[in-house]
Length: 290
Ligand SMILES: [Zn+2]
Image 1 (cartoon, helix red, strand yellow):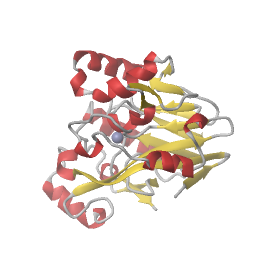
Image 2 (tube, helix red, strand yellow):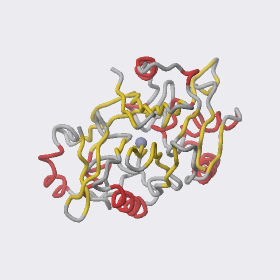
Image 3 (cartoon, rainbow, N blue to C red):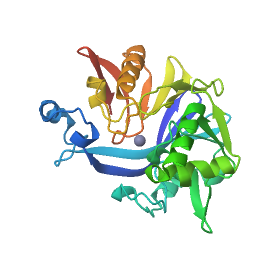
Image 4 (cartoon, rainbow, N blue to C red):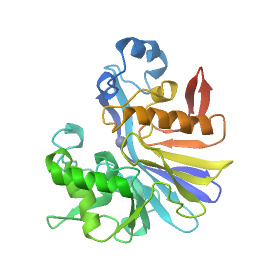
């Protein structure tokens, strides 16, 4: 099924690769206590939390179709990629992603830009595909837009400890080697419809993507939020955060700015339909999700 969101002249498509219960909530959020989970169970279940207390997550891309460009934001997990520490992502071999891309009306040749909000395994996978034993860019006509300090950090990490980040080896460095990368600041104004917004903390130079103008806009969050629990409790860190304190401060600052406005939040990992608006809840926030 093709899912579309209209923001002024721009159409945003969701391209889903995977959806289901993936991680145990108490493991995923290391500072989440059983008591706090219990307190929130009634509204989390069944949609956001399965009966075994696993978080129900979606793995997806957002395809932003402006008047000028087709921009793919985040590229999921990908096929044939060794991910020994994540059984549900290890050596995937699925046609679901490409079928959903086709259902939205696009092929790999139609993508002009790929933006990775950050360089984690579930946001870079389809950057490359296997061709005759080599990793080549999946989108042959695309420029890949990476934040400068994000790329520098992961390039160094891969050099020092490649086994800790196999996705950098197979899904990031090959597009660099193919001269397909535009290295930008995480404040980069791409054009008059698309702007990068720095949302650091989950990773060192994470960015979100604003589409449209205030009043008629959407914010594609990447991983600055993983669950609506982090709206109610912005300081709740996630296990892979680079700096959980900074990630919490980023959520408070951004949500304060867009709270009770029409800005549509397009999250990477909330279960479908994954989008909603930020409203005030006690001294924090909540998300109205469809
Ligand atoms: Zn992610």
